[in-house]
Image 1 (tube, rainbow, N blue to C red):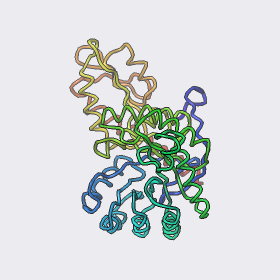
Image 2 (image 1 turned 90 degrees about the horizontal axis):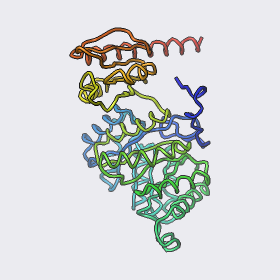
Image 3 (image 1 turned 135 degrees about the horizontal axis):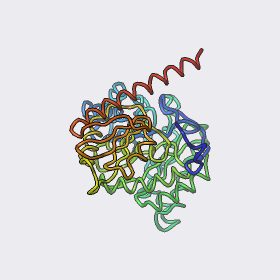
Length: 378
């Protein structure tokens, strides 16, 4: 439940953008911010690629991007699209014909790079294929592959050059009466990305896809993405996002959701609030949280769980969560339900017990949502 009405300092006013559709996923407007990732398998290895898509979808991905570097990949895309549980975005670079083939294969969206897709005539052919096959387009500007004339004009990659590139290609799409597009202006430099996105947000009402490209490995990439995407989302900018990590695509999805959850923009699964632990802890907090994260991955219902090692902050944090556990003494701690102290539980049984309590609470929340929906329909 949103508490923004009594805590105005938590309120984020999202930028007003028009809405498009990527397959069955609405993007922009008042739609939830979509989380996407990208496969890193060979696209021609259909089984491996589909397995990655399915794993990402299970982790919560709304969209999955698949690279289409050659004709064989475009042919494989048709089967991947058929077996995917979520809309597929085809990643197109250098050869415009791959975009046409991807649209024909059933891609829900084509990501084209203004810096390498070719002249306006070629872009026009991609637009026609997208229109004919009910496919949207993402204009994907990247600081590392800007057009030559823009690099000559500005001297180096910069926010102004990135935004100009994006707006030039928006004009091409609009000149061909095509409006089902979103846009991104990515860079590996957090400052450049943030500045470019802020300028872009003022220059167009198109839905914006956020990302810090080539962010790095799991730890460094997560931090860079959290800083870059976090500040933009806090400003209300962003309709879809991808956290680019040199890691398993599932990890990208998890980090993306954690960023959105931390800002109250989307909620999925159990939000675990836990202390870093210290000498006061009444149980091993770190190992307990690791176990609970694994054991609760299957819970998709938005809810909160506090795991605090001692009574300094434990009871206070538990007041704000659906389920809580606070360490005490003599090998046991206190279980909190709906913010109130409920009963004691031994440390050696706490993990199993907390999982049961979370599952029970999730079932209650889901039942209440179903009842409310049925009541609204009557």
